[in-house]
Image (cartoon, rainbow, N blue to C red; front, side, top):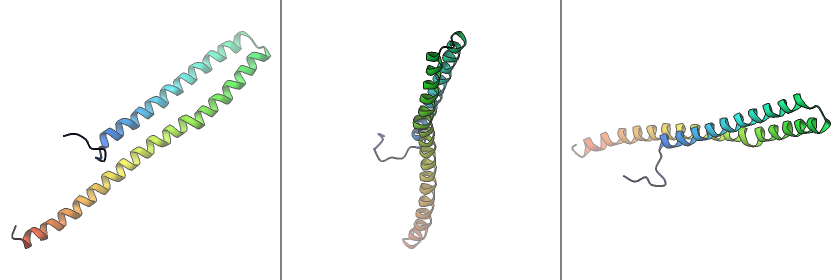
Length: 110
């Protein structure tokens, strides 16, 4: 059966949320690697230009953390929360329908 655009698929949502987590983790690893390279450069030369590079990196890295990584984490958490909420709503609705079907079925002679 082909998926419709409105069909709820919790496994697919979890998969996309995990992709967000993985991407954020990879970016964080790259930032740490870059920080290591900058620190190695600082150890070899302590000129004002090298210190300026460190300062620029620290500001840029903080901005990336706030603007990208934090938001990606919030987005992945929100996706999971909404998927869980939908799953709970589907279960509640199914229970309500099933409790209605039984009296109707008895009335109709089922």
